[in-house]
Image (cartoon, rainbow, N blue to C red; front, side, top):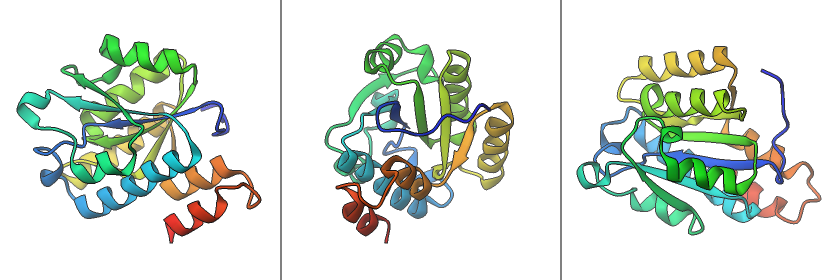
Length: 183
């Protein structure tokens, strides 16, 4: 992967399917929710765009309240394709933002997230996966998908590393808020 810095002007957060009927089945769901909420709040503090997806909400429910409350500015797009990139409304929104670096988080790592990551990379985006903000029902599926995406060219970072890379300096006006968020 050609390393592209995560900069405020080039980055968008893509959250995949944190839904009512999916989250309870995830391995490590408490850690997933905690890290994801912190990352979403960090993006709100930094004023960065967030696009969330919901896979067939009629059957799988809405995004869980903890995630929805973590970033009030997020845009929500419903989908039926596993890859969000196969959904016209999603592609249109991402292209509208004009940002070529995506941080992708959510569930399930080995299905919807992996397919979205691969399709976004094929479309010319640089993609990072926040490893502590992804989950599958089985840890082995999650771990295999993270390795596969990394070998395919995605970067893998922690949510904290992502937030501090976006800050760039302790002199940033949001530094204290981000530091408090991760502690």
